[in-house]
Image (cartoon, rainbow, N blue to C red; front, side, top):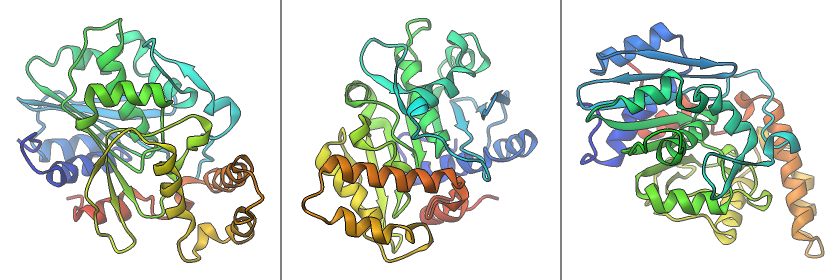
Length: 305
């Protein structure tokens, strides 16, 4: 059994990180990886518009892996249309419109392959993973599995995400943290800006356990909490204070402006949002420290077979 709740978090992260990475490949490659890991039960590739992933199982486990954003495509997560808050399947909290719509095309009010596989899980535990956009979908999938009134509540064993953006407002984050925060594991690599968007000031915040890899690749002790303004500001500054690198080249003037004590916090946020939006619009492959294989699997000491 490759996944085990009693195992160390890093051991499960190595398997789930592989799943998040292999999700970028063709269905055939995904299925061969799953079989090699012992997931010899039914394989389903899930797909709807720009949302893809797969569901596999063995005798004790169901694994859901979501694909992240493909390279060479502009990322529109911070536009007013995509980043506005959306009322989801529960009456507490709101979520990111673009992410929720992306999940909804493969959920379909609980009638699609994905939710039906979860509802028909038997005694199997459910594990969900994803990188980048896939991580946001993993978190929202877990939320809908737990709270969607159109299906029977599905207990989630764990959610592991890598370089995942924020998905919901503080009320949503608190609801999920209270329900399953101890089972949500977010991995963040050094200067990766994706986990720092949408901005906290836009009404979004993280929850669950965060493991942060510093510039040397050292993992800090996991912290578990609903994100606050203080922690969000500190988190953002880690990406802005690094030595000059390609993605930060345009920040030199921005940093001088932000340092002006007379500048309002609102204006500072506008500057950061504009810069990070420009980086994302240039393509996810241009985001430093974000690549799943080279960065996150490398930090975990894992490789794809």
